[in-house]
Amino acid sequence: MKRLYFIVDHLKHTESISDDIHKAGISDWHFHVLSKDESGLYRRHVHTANIYHRNDLVHSGQRGLIFGVLFGILLLLGLHFFNIELPQYIPLIFFVMASCFGAWLGGFYGIQMNNYQLKRFEAEIDKGKYLIFIDVTRKNQQQVKALMHQYHPEAKEMGQGNTLILPFA
Image 1 (cartoon, rainbow, N blue to C red):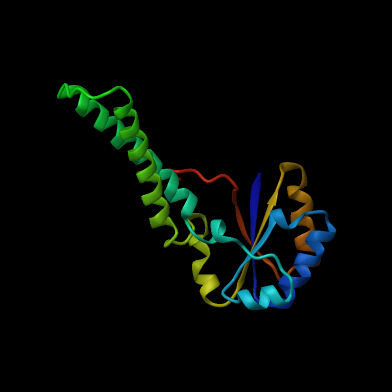
Image 2: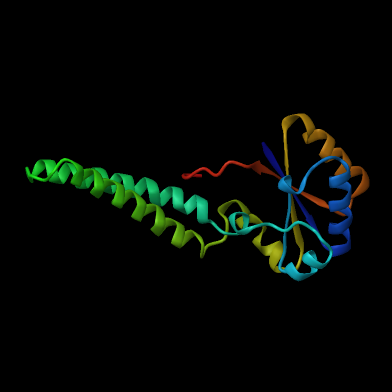
């Protein structure tokens, strides 16, 4: 799926866009708004971005997992190289623990950081604007763009991205 990004200046425009997007058949699962004004979005029943959209939890967790796996492999090679005699299940436990620790540490770091996909919009959000992102299929991408341009010229199109979270993007 593709993710379309739009910036809007006012909450009333954001609410209007939300209503029109829902009328077009796009559910809350595919429509999110990120803003400093969380309470205003809540009062107007506009679907806000969740923690996975705001923070870099998944992306950093994936990276941490990869580094944990690599560390686990190095640990196993070290045990093998130094010819350390252990029961067969112990090296597997070390490997799993290293992998889990890497994922945990990466997630712990990522929850403190802003989402890497949204860094380009931080200045606009800090100014009090509303970032709208809509997940669309290729089939309905042009329909959503046409709807936004026709009925909501106040929404500035900011490009598109991908809904996948890639560890080395």
